[in-house]
View (cartoon, one colour):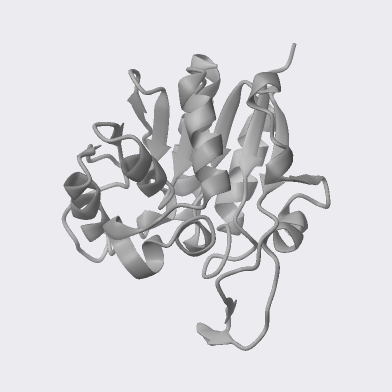
Length: 224
C-alpha cells in the first residue's frame, strides 16, 4: 500500500505563508516515490499579509487554511482533523508562515510559542515513532519542542550564501544539535526520526533546493 504522508502548510507565499516552491517540491517527490500526500493547514488568521512585490505588509486579512488551499488545488483539510493513526509520516515545508502562523519565531526567536494544534501534531508523530520531515525554517519547530534533537538549517556562519545562519545558534541555545549541511543534503536524526534540509535558507539555484527536498522526502519514506 502507498505510504500516507501528512503535509502541513502555513499559507501561500514565502513572506507570509508556505514557500510555494518547497511545498510543490515536497508534493512532486512524494508522488514520484509512490506516496500519497494528504495536505492540512490550521484554520486560523494569518499573522499578516505581505505584498510580495513591495515586500511590505498590507492591511488585508487572510486565512491560513484558505490560502494553503491554493497550493493544494483545493484538496486540503483542517489541521484539527488530522489523525496520526492513519498516517505514516509528516512533512512541513518552510516559508515565513512557519515562523509567523505556525509559531511566533519571527517575532520572538527562541523564546517563541508554537501553535497548540501544530505542537500537538508534532508530538503525536514523535510519540508514535513516525518520521517527521522539515524544510528550511521549519526545523526550529523541532528544536523548540524536542530538546537534544539533531536538525539542519544549512550552515551556522552567516555569509552571502547563508544569510539566515544565525538561526543555527538560536537553535543551539534551545539545546538542539545543529548539523552543518549542503543545500542538496538532508540530515537524519535516527533517534528522533527527524529529517531536515536547508532549502531556501541557502541562496542556491532552485534545482539544488529541489534536489535537497527530494533527499529529505526519500529519507522520510525510508523511515516510515
